[in-house]
Image (cartoon, rainbow, N blue to C red; front, side):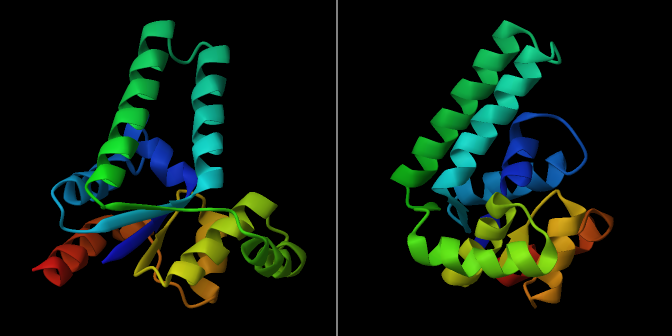
Length: 162
């Protein structure tokens, strides 16, 4: 099973907020070898930018910032090493596909590239913490994460894994 994570869902693994328990579930199952996570190379830069914003706004201290950064880096490298993470490069074809969503749905290019990446990989689920992006992905017939159905989605994924 391949699960695509957008930047907002990746961040939930390292910053406690609504959806963190779901992100923890996915990362834990990937670390155990039960499922594979995927994201675009572009997401790494976005995640690092979010961490930096938390530090600049004094929402985290220097020590917490370095712990988040280390955990993200260590976990990313570990999942890559055990083949439970796919990092898709931002190819021209993905960007060109994404332009449709930018124009039709008024998405930011990064969000559109994430949807294109998920479609390109034929991911089982597309997971985003952004409701608008989730709604667009859902309209495109992607299976999506919704916070209000988190527990039922966890149960569904668990049953698909067994």
